[in-house]
Image (cartoon, rainbow, N blue to C red; front, side):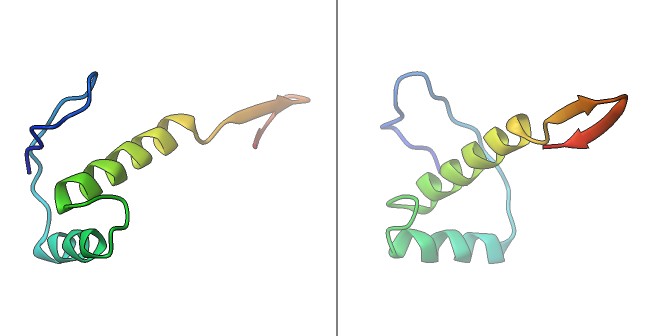
Length: 69
């Protein structure tokens, strides 16, 4: 899954996923959704998931209680 055309500031990792996930990544790549090949599609999903993980949930404190935004 290595991509020799990585953008500056990016790196590569090797991951193991289920055969079903590989098929889904291939299908999305065939449709041109999220990338041109399964490696690009997987990279986008990983980036998106990590950004969502870091960005949420945010907590707001009001009157001594924690509330999710």
